Length: 193
Image (cartoon, rainbow, N blue to C red; front, side, top):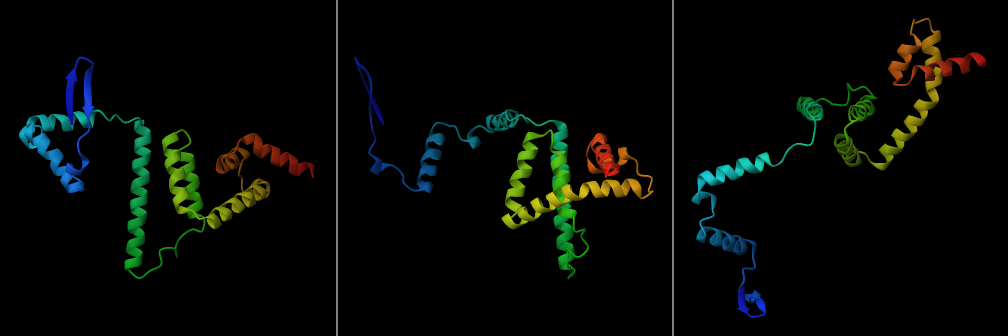
C-alpha cells in the first residue's frame, strides 16, 4: 500500500493481492514480523506487556452485583456436585436416577426461576440452559403438569386446612408461594359449595 501526495491530497493505491499471505500461518507470521520490526512484541518489552495485561483486566468491570455473582457461583457449584455425584454412581454400577425424587427436576427449575426473579442476566442464562436441556415433548409434559398443578391447588388447600393438621392459611400460602388472600378465597369458595 503506497500513498502518493500531490496538491489534491493523498491517493490510495491498492497492493497486489497475489503477493499477500493467504494462509492463516502466513498471515500470522506477517503480522508478527511487522510487530517485531517495530519492537512491539511482548517479549521486546515485558514490563509494558504486563502493564497491558493488567490494564485489560481492569477495563472489563462486572455489571453484576455481588449477590448475582454469588448466586451464579452457587448454582455452578451445585451443578458440578450433581455431575460428580452422577459419575460416581455410574462408576459404581448404579443408576443415578434410581434414588431421585420424581419432582426433583421441576423443583430445580422452579428454584432457579425464583432465584433469578430480579436478575435479568441470570434469568436469560437459565432460559438459555432450559432451551438446550428441554425437548418439545419435555416442555409439553411440564406445561400439562403446570395445568394439573393449577387444577389440583384448590383441593390441596382445602385438604391441608381441613385435615386437622393445624396448617394455617398463612403457612399454606407460604408453601404454595401465593398470597394469603388467594388461600382464603379458595376456602371461602369451598364453604359456599
